[in-house]
Length: 273
Length: 315
Image 1 (cartoon, rainbow over the protein chains, first blue to last red):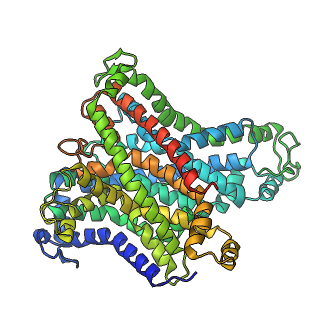
Image 2 (tube, each protein chain N blue to C red):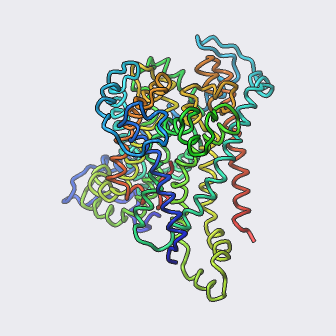
Image 3 (cartoon, helix red, strand yellow):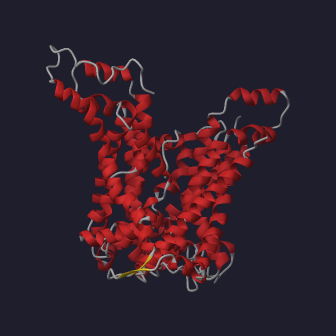
């Protein structure tokens, strides 16, 4: 079926609606507070970005630079861990034989369905108090080092992407299981690993409820910095929007570079958000 | 699945001239290493996922406060909760926003997927376009929408000529604004899921229907929708889980306050749980809220599942 005019119009309108709030965010971030009350609202960027950034970095209670650095550390660590541990487990579930394999896999599947993170937030917090981790980055890293979804995704991919013959051949050549993982399985799983990494990074970067519970404003993630800005200076739109825009830049960079893979991941049913 | 030709674990070690490995290390490699590979997941998951979940039950049966003072009170938290007007208010808000956001969202996603499925130039651009909202953080989205819906000089009020309307003031208006945020973020994602399912439908089904004289509309309802059933079930379940545990959007809409407006007009259950735990420090009570939320999610998921299976055209 070819697209008619109506379809095209629908899509163009959708495109505009999708992009507008983000565009608007950048427009306001580049202007001064004169935009407040401007009728009609301005649609083009102004020249005030530098001044806004300076004000942003000077706003001590938002701790924005620290927030950006912390989020980068947390998201990178979590992504590396999820990718490595999920691909190891996924490989084992897909290609190795061991007693209890199917039962263990079933527990992974069941836990995938449960919104565990919100359900267990109170005991998790109590644990952090006990460990003395409240306010430290460990508290927002450790609980996210693995997830059931990653294991499942890696297993599904390994089943079809890694031929048994290849593993067999490597064994005959005397490779150990770990060596097979490193030299045969991991290279074959690169596309799925990339998708998992992208999504884990974005998800961790965007995490809000748990950092809000367990971190403090003196050592925040970037989402907490935005939240602090927004509650203290919500009249100062340009300041808040500059922070918001800056925190969105890494995500937009990922999207521009890897958008195609992300779409592929979603459309292959690979990705749960 | 497993290749039947795969050498069984008990078979002899590889030829010695190629790999001089001891019997023991072969045994270790084949029998123990698989467990070592899956164990980090299970260990970390048990500590940070399973244990907190189970422990929530235990905490919910206590009067458990900040300092760690606790007293066993059985089901008292739950009986109190059932008579708690604030809790029911949050249930009403959550379900209200869930319905208000999810139904239009899934219908729009379906229409959008249908449009994206047509042949045209710039396909990738459109697909990327509908996904743009998903890559921004919820916090960022909520900040921007909070401003768009602002009472004074807000973009929406300017557009609708409703100057001075405070969108946070009433249930209907705050629910609408929050639902718009949710839908803006998720419609494109769901559309891509539907699109993927649509592309998997065999083309000859449509060709046969065309020969039989079925209109495009009829084809959509009689072929596309029934074939999309698994995707519809999937998106309904994920939207249900996401919708019922709604937290970030309404919190940011209230400038970071978990109370959900002056009268709690948009406080969700997740926010009420957070408020009980981290503002009032009533861990036991908050844990009971967490379990009620969990039950609610299971229940609604079950009904959504049954419902979507039906509309999917079990004829």
